[in-house]
Image (cartoon, rainbow, N blue to C red; front, side):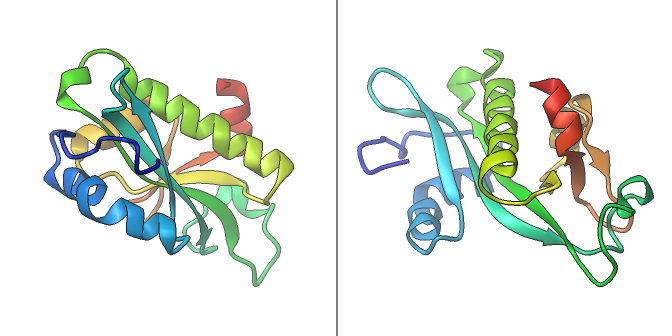
Length: 158
């Protein structure tokens, strides 16, 4: 995302995601807390966005099936898909799915070429978001609202 992108007209169903894009995204980018990727129309109006950042997942949250890959006394390196939203004007267009696939592809590519990461995690904001991620194979983590998608699963998706 850059200053040339028009973000002020962006509106999705979730006010916190609107507020983030309007008020916080540039600060997080500047502070290197997240990177924000946008989908825009021909007039450079933001139609959708997602954020990625690095994260560490404690061993206590990692599903048993994947725990053997993590050395004792280590946390798992993961990519956090922190926010994903599409404008109401794009509802029903498949843009949300396209943004998710782009985020997963980008995360997988990073894990193969630049940084170690065994999975992508999300923390769905509501039940409909949880259902959306569930369709793509995200696994609910025990004792957490977060969901987990291993890089090996992403490799099969893309």
